[in-house]
Image (tube, rainbow, N blue to C red; front, top):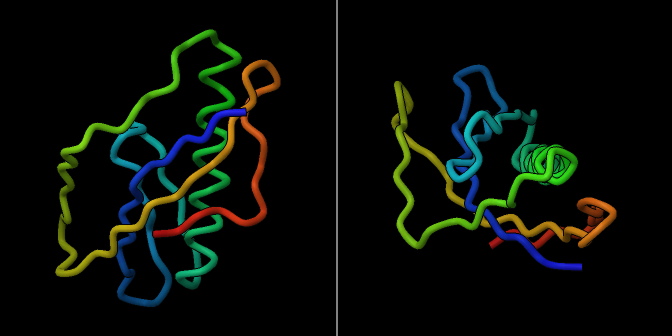
Length: 101
């Protein structure tokens, strides 16, 4: 089982909650009502994204050291690292305790 760590961008919503984007995984976007929920949803979104790539026989992306993000209309953002564990043959395994850095 291998570990895959990605930076997530958490953008606060004006009415509460967070939109979460994973810059290294195009189109990998989710949301949560609280910071904790948003991070857990990010873990699930990353796991699902990697599972689809593995099912299609595509390589799993490796995040580069340089990350560029666009804030859009937001004036603030939070960056965190989320780690998921992926099996070599059975697809990513959901981790109840993800690493958030």
